Structures are given as structure tokens and as C-alpha cells.
Amino acid sequence: MPNVTIHCHAELNDFLPRDRQDTPFTVPWVDNGSIKNLIESVGVPHPEIGLLLVNNAAVDFTYLVQPGDQIEVSPSSGSSAGGAQPAVRLRPPLTTTRFILDTHLGRLAGYLRMLGFDTLYRNDFDDPELARLAHDQTRILLTRDIGLLKRSLVIYGYFVRATDPERQLREVAQRFNLAHAAASFERCMRCNGLVQRVDKAQIDHLLEPRTRQYYHVFHQCRECGQIYWQGSHFARMQAVIERVMQAKHDE
Image 1: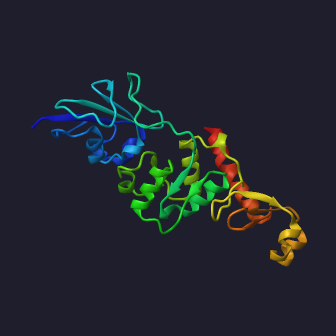
Image 2: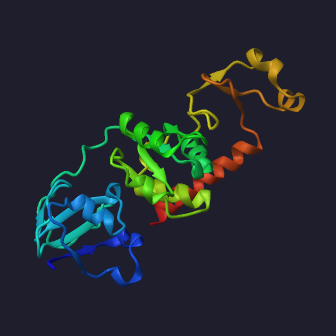
Image 3: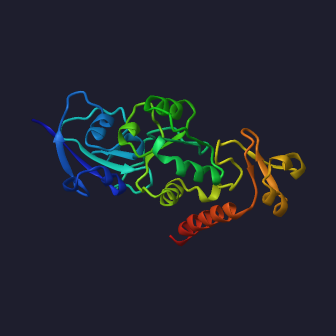
């Protein structure tokens, strides 16, 4: 039976069994099979892929694999196979950085909103709805579900490796270079609406007595009405931002 050879680079090895990591491996050739389907069949979801080389020539996801092909697969992060020819674009460039997150990433959704990024999240989204919204609204799908990331409707996506929410935020910030675009505390962490300064007199009746006594600068979500002020919770969130941004600066 004819074979093809695949070599996955850098973080794409996270999706492979140990004996296939950082080394070329062979798989059976399938007649009339696309390279997208072939690479996903070995475990790598297509949104994680940034460059495909076949016999050292760049191809897109529609390329039909031929017997004996030598395939190099590189991630979207920029770490690619040596000797690469000019890349064929695998997907249109993003003009805005917007996210949609699966049900397992609620804390990360709050953190991304804290940094000012448009982040869609509900804990009752099912997989078909997540894929459809990611596609229709041109959002980056962040997930811990590799199967969800392989859905054909998903164009932009990323498998979040870390399990700790702050580490997840650091990981996503580094992967998508968020530091330069962050606008901290401009979005509501609860509903994703935009936050604006509000006169204390307008919301005085909604405040707890100690909050009314000790704080005088307030912001309120335009959508859900959530009220924010610079109390101890603000200091904790500011500390998270500083740690994430400092980690990026130290690299």
C-alpha cells in the first residue's frame, strides 16, 4: 500500500503520540483525500496549522494528497519547517481580535473581558452553536476540546493547553500577541458589554453602605448595569494583568 510521510513541527506535536513527535512518520495514502482531512486524522486540528509544505512547496487545505508525498506541517505561531517557500494563505487574515470560548473556560472569558477583548461566552453553548458563531462572527474559538476545534465551520481557533485560568490567560496573550491591544477594564466581566463612567448620584441607591462611604469613582456596564469601583477586587485584577504582561515582557 502506498504511503505518505508527515512531519509536524513545534507545538503541533502536542497533538501526537510520543513516537510521532518531532520526527517524520508514515501513514497510508488515501485516494482522493485532502491534506486537511489527512492531518486531522492523525490528531492535529486545522485551526492550529499555519503552513503546509508538500515536497517543499506550499499548498492549501484543498490539496489532494498523492502517494509518496513528503508533508511538513507548521503551527500558526510562526515556528515553521526550514527551507519553506512563500506560504499559501490557509485562511483570510483577521482584522479584529474577538473570541468565543467553550463551557470549560469561564474564568478565562472573564480575564479576556478584563483586558478589554470582545469575548463571547455562555455555559450552555453546545458544540454546533459554538462552531457556527465562531464562523459567522469571525471569532477565534478557544477550547479544551480538540474535536470541537476540528469542526469544518471553525476557521480561527486554538486549543488551550493550560488548566489554571491565569496560566491560560498568559498562554492566550502570548499566542495572539494581546499585550499591544489590551484596553483593561473597558468591558464588563459579567456580560461583555462596554463599561462607562457614571456619576455616583445616579447609582447611589444601588450601593452598599460601606461602598457608598469609601468610594466615589464608579463605572457601569451599558448592557447589564453591573457597577464597578476600585476596591480590593480591582487591585486583585490589576495584579493579574501586571503578572501576565510582565511574563510577556520577560520573554
